[in-house]
Length: 244
Image (tube, rainbow, N blue to C red):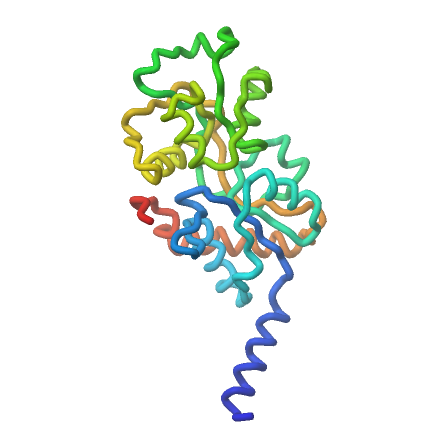
């Protein structure tokens, strides 16, 4: 074995040993995390990679699993060495997860077609309205807090399905992060200008959420690194035109 190859193997092993054993979950949530041409991309992923580099940690691509939000949400509660991105912070969720890197502001809202004629006053009164949601997504949970019963929800797997269903008029409204819905409309080749933010439900921040049993010292270390790289490189969180 050559000296160069031996040194490479030693370095690789050393990096892996010095890195935490975290299984990361994510979903299709552009521009923060999404898959394009078989590869994971997104602002939150870029920040996470830079935080790992800041800490001299090694991130193996096999430690990041793209899945549906309901599956990721459940897995991180059950799997001790796991985290998920991106998740909106709320007080009820803080009881289930430990949050780090809350650096991305977001607005969760009820979104309607601009020609639908639906008013805010109708939302609680009109029991015939249907709301497209992703189960356990922040839009789903925010609607429950607003007082909309489960019987009016149509459960879908992804944000892309949400925007298509409202455009096909299979649901009357959707509840989702407003900025991400705009990206999903573009992705589905639907003009986002045809849709309006009918009612803001929640103003919060997006970040990374981990199982409650992950060591606090590790989480604090990663939280500081995420915030440090965002301060040093604010362009990492700049939105760009979504392009697959």
